[in-house]
Image (cartoon, rainbow, N blue to C red; front, side, top):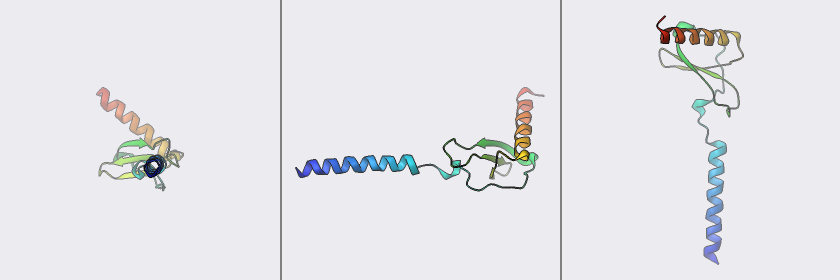
Length: 97
């Protein structure tokens, strides 16, 4: 009887641990919680990443030449323009233009 109770207890504990990991196991590096508001010069941006869909806020992470990761709001006009310029620059460099 005791072994059955222990077995149930450890199974429930395992389930709770799995649920905890699913809910709280998000890596904060992949989500933006604060946004840089001032425009970042496009010439200093090497690339960008969009945050994951399960982040609390949608965001874009600009990666600079100095490897800084800057969270910005994708709704800002300057962010949209910067992304467009980076995309154009990447296409031109990949096609050799």
